[in-house]
Length: 112
Length: 113
Image (tube, rainbow over all chains, first blue to last red; front, side, top):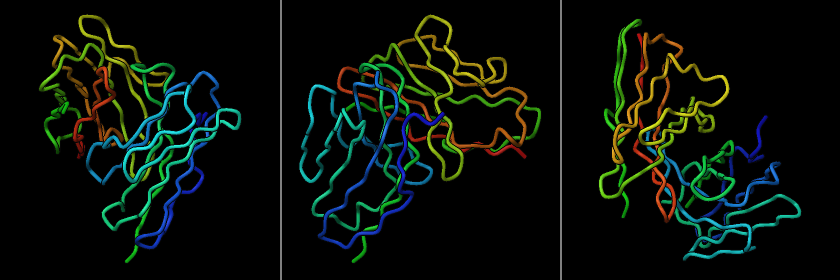
């Protein structure tokens, strides 16, 4: 039972344009959401998070949007840079500090 | 910032032997650490939650006797893969939680031959 899904396994974007990565979840008890960037054979690197009391959080080029009614969140990266090319995972937990459930990942490729 | 050191980064072992993977929080105390496993091009699957001074909580389908977890101090958790088989070959990642979020180790690539 995949409680967190990323329906796009891959995404290709031109440098300078916006990258939008999507994530859907089914567990209504999730109240804390995170996005991670990951390279092969490395651990995930934290990007940005959002709690369920908010619908938007911004940090530099990264913005996360949360739509609780739709059980959907998205990560916007603007402008996209070649160094952003990696696999992006969304993750969710019931309360901060509890175990994370990861999505299936989206491979982002930012092209010159 | 918070750093989690995971060692070794890569290990090759023979079938039937045991392998220990260490996860250390270098500049903070972690009462809870998590162990994940990632298959090629797949998501990170939580194996167990490790609590300092108590038994680990394993996820459904994870063999407790095969994947031994010890969290003897606030800065160290270990995962021992016992009697390893080729199907245990995978990428194992630990994570520690602190006030400001979760920090992940760099992972361990285990290959059982």
